[in-house]
Length: 132
Image (cartoon, rainbow, N blue to C red; front, side, top):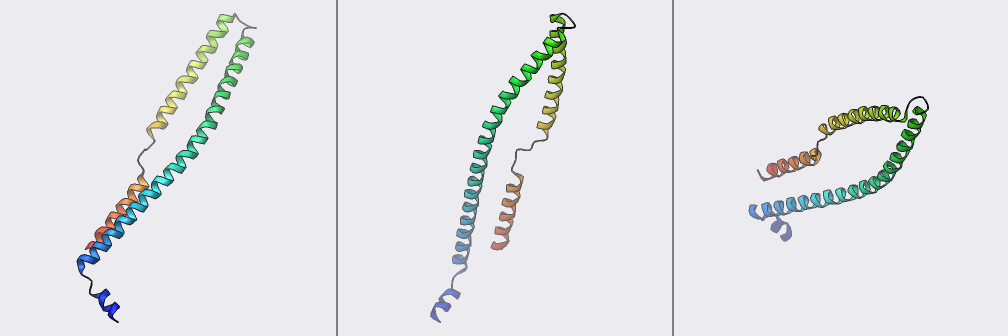
């Protein structure tokens, strides 16, 4: 019975101090969790990027060989310089179109972690409601 009386006689300052300590613990835990998640995802992304880089190098050689084949095929019906010029012009158009499409897609990228910001706002609101 004495223990219950002791628990009920805690001051408001003690209760607020406990709430703040718990909130700090929650926030620290969330930050640790976020760091762990980001690290794990960055590791996965780095490995995937390495594989993709190898694939990109192989793709470049493949395209180069295809273009060389097209060049030799065109050279059978026109002078070599004409075949090279025609292929150059075609590749220049394809390059410009791809770069423009990539630039447009980059504009749609949002680098801010919106979900994390939203949950942090919710946590702040919760803390405010608990201290009222």
